[in-house]
Length: 629
Image 1 (tube, one colour):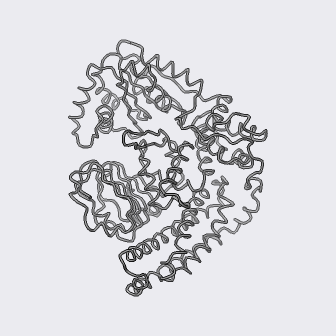
Image 2 (cartoon, helix red, strand yellow):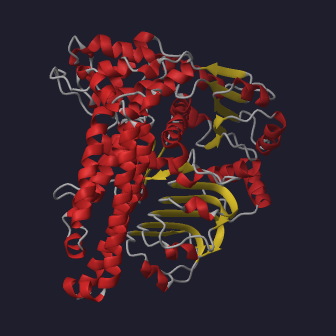
C-alpha cells in the first residue's frame, strides 16, 4: 500500500518537475540546476517504486523505509509548489507589461534569497534521501528476489477487446431479484398496528444493501403504492437526532435545513406527513440505543396507515433496537453467481478470455467472498490490467491471508487500489476529505484536482476534459458511485461507499484528520487533508503545518490568527451551518487555487483576495448579499 501511494504521489511530483525545469523562471533565477538535481533524485526514487508499486508487501517490516520515502516526496511536492508560486508571480508581472529581465533586476535581492532557500531545501532532501538509502540496506536484495513474472506484463493478451464497463449502478444478480420482489410485497402489504412497519435489509458492508434499496424505490409498484412520497436519509455511524431532523426536512421539503429552527422543521415535517402514506429509507444505520430511535421515530407517527420504513444496516443489534420484524438478510453470492457477476461487470462473456485467464480469474473472484462491491472493484482493475502475470500476482498476494470474510473484502479493495492506474491514485485518495455519505459535485471535484496539480495535461486537451476522464474511470471502478444528474443545470454528483471511504483513510493514515486532536503529536502534524464536520472552537495552529486541503462541513470553527503565508493550502471548502462573515484567514493563503464558500454574509470580495496569486476557481453558494462581479 505504501509503495502504491508513494508511486501515485511520485507521478504528480514528476509532472510538476518537468514543467518547472524548462520554465523561463528557472533559467532567469538560476534554480534550473537545482531543479535538475532534484529531477535526477526523483528519477532514482521512481526507479525503486516502479519495481515495488504493484507489490502487496505492507506486512514486510523491511519495507518501512517506504513511509519515509513517501514523506520525502511530500516535501518535494511542497518545495515545487513554492517554486511554482514564484513562477506565477513572475508571469503576472510580465503580463502587466514588465519585462522578465527588468523584473529580475528589480527583485534581485529577494530572488537571490529565494534561490538560496531552494538550494538549501534540495540539499536537505538529498541528505534525507541518503539516510533512507542507508536504512534500507537489504532493499536491493528484496528487489532482486521479486519474481520477475509478477513484475512484467504478459504478452499473452485477452483475445477480444471488451466493451466499456456499464454505467449502471449494479449489474443484475438473479438471486437479488427474488429478494427484491419479497421486500416489495412486504412494503405494500397492509398490516394493522406496528407489525411490518419497519422492513430491514441486513448484510455485510459491500453486499449491495443500498443498491437493492435504490432499485426498490425505483420500482413502478412502489412508486404507485406510495404515490411518489418516497424519502431517503443516509443515517451513518454518528447518530444525532437534530441532524436526522434536518436531513428528514431536506428530504421531504427539498430545502436546506441550515436556516430553519428545529421546532419549525418538526412542525413542517408533521404537517407534510399527516394523513399521507409514505416510504422512508433509513440507509446505513449503526446506532443501537432503543431510546434514541424511539425519540426519532415519534416524528413519523402522523403518516397514514400503510406508511413504511425501509432500513439498511450491517448490524443485527440495530434491528433489535428499532424492533424490526420483517428482516431480509442478504446472502453471499454463490461461486457461479460471483463469476457471472464479475463477467457482467466487466462487459465480458467467458469466451472473451483465453484459457489461461479463466482459472486465475475464478480463483480471484472466489477470494472476494461473494460480496458484490469487492467483485466489482477488483473486476475493474482486472479489466484494465490484462496481463496474465498481473492476474496471478493478485491471486497470490499475501494480503489474502485473512480468516474472516470482512477482512478479505477489505483486502480486495486494497488490491484494487494497489493496481489502480497511477494517475488516478492521488485523485482517489483526495476524496478522503469529504464526509461519509456526502454528495460530491463532479465539476467542483475536478477543479479541486486541478488546484492540486493531479491532472496531467496532454497535447491539445483541456484540463477539465482530462478530469472528466479521470472521474469516469473512478466511477467505472466503483470507487465513486451513485451518479446523479440534475436538470436543467446538468449538474452531476456522486457518492463514495462507506467501505471505499474507509479505504482512503486506511491508505492515508495520519495524513487525513477529521477532528481536532486533543493533544498535538508528530503524527497529527503530518496532516495533509483537514476535514472538520460539525466542529466549533479554535483550530490548532500546529495542525496546519503541512495541510494542503481544508474541508469544513457544518459548525463554525475558528481559523483566526492561525495561518501564516508559508502554509501550503491549495483548496478550501467552507460549508458553514449558519451565515458567517467572510473568513479572513483565506487572504493569507498564497497557494490557494480553489475556494468554495457556503452561507457567508459578504457584500463584496475583500480587495486583499488579490494576494492569492494562484486562485483559479471561486464559488459562493447560498451567500447573502454577495456581489462578486
